[in-house]
Amino acid sequence: MSARPSRYIPHTADDVRDMLATIGVADLEALFASIPEKQRLARPLDLPRAASEQEVAAELAALAARNAHAGSHGWFLGAGSYAHYAPSAVDALVSRAEFTTSYTPYQPEISQGTLQAIFEWQTMICGLTGLEVANASLYDGASATAEAVLMALRIAPKRRRVLLAPGLHPHYAEVLGTYVRALDVEIARLPRGADGRSAPLVGAVDADTACVVLQQPGYLGAVEDLAAAAEAAHAHGALLVVVVTEALSMGMLRAPGELGADVVCGEAQSFGVATSFGGPALGFLAAREKHVRQLPGRLCGETLDARGKRGFVLTLSTREQHIRREKATSNICTNQGLCLLQATIYLSLLGRVGLARLARLNFAKAEYLKQQIRGAPGLALPLAAPTFNEFVVSVPDPLAALARADEAGLVGGLDLAPYEPSLGPALLVCATELATRAAMDALVAALTGRRA
Image (cartoon, rainbow, N blue to C red; front, top):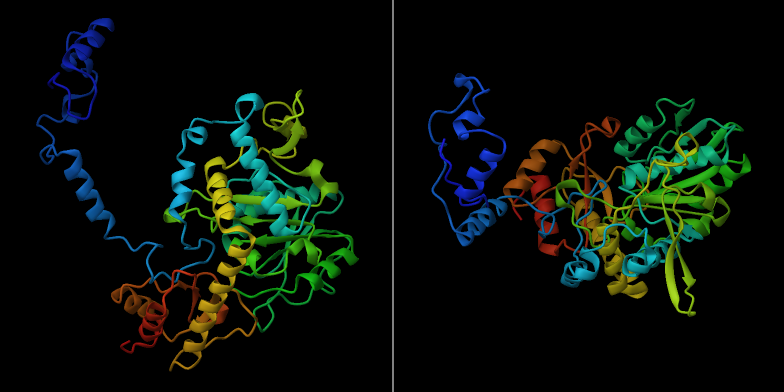
């Protein structure tokens, strides 16, 4: 082996020689003497010639262009991760040094920017959910849901039953099952109604039920009757936990807290965070103020400093895994800071009016697509419940339909066979503001097998 360093390795020949001398090895051959000869490569690696930064960037861009991506107009895949347009100002602002140099805000006097971002985020989540307190975010929607259920079990420690509505995302249900696997907890499931919504809760909730977990909109897109669910849960002293995977829906639908939800949690990736092949994501969790002591993670608060100026501190930060151990409310000791910052900037840019307009635009796009599907041969909408921007389409052959969509440059949706086989051959389709009319028409043509 040669001591001559590679173009992309910062060590010079002198550096290598000094390091070998320090550890008492004569040369690189002696350094690797413990590795059997037959396991060592005796020839140079078969690598292409060295390239300049410009050439490497061009090659990587060409490779990336081969991927279908969520920023394209032909992306109709949702199911928990949603393609939305993020203004360029989001990336520009999160890249500022004031934010990139911050790690974790344990010293408030040097972390005011980060603390204020968290505080503003909490305030926005409270406004969207209709609840009084929100934490500084969690890792993703699935873990936020599991933490919300654990919270409900702490609030009602003698109750050991958790009732899951059929519209809960199947991956969230799996994560929840993992969280409570070692606990004395029964997970029961509600049946799905004919229109896609949950069957009525009357008779399903009992005195041992700690909480009802209901997703809004549901995994199949159905908008649920939260007020009726809250009434049924509260009649037996149970909490209503509402899960939101498409956070943009809160810009149009009435706040869950106003309809009786006790805890609202879920995924806020839609707020300026790229899908990025599935992560990172941004979990959120809000609750009524009387339950604040059972809230997992950290909570930022506003205060005044010694000079009477506005400032921010971590009001609740118990560092559970270090201090409380078996008495901990959770092992969540940090938050998804960068994604939180992206979402906070995104929401600040859109504002209350802009978010509502965007939500209505998503609804209108999906309604147009549903209208085109209703009149298309071989296609049907099997569920009658109202939806936001996602819904189920019955197709004769989902795999063939998705293949035709792919040939047309479209990502046509999710095959529901592994998740909802009772629906028969069907796709879950989502239309956000990125979907153009031409792309939606092309999707319908691809699903039917006709030319657009």
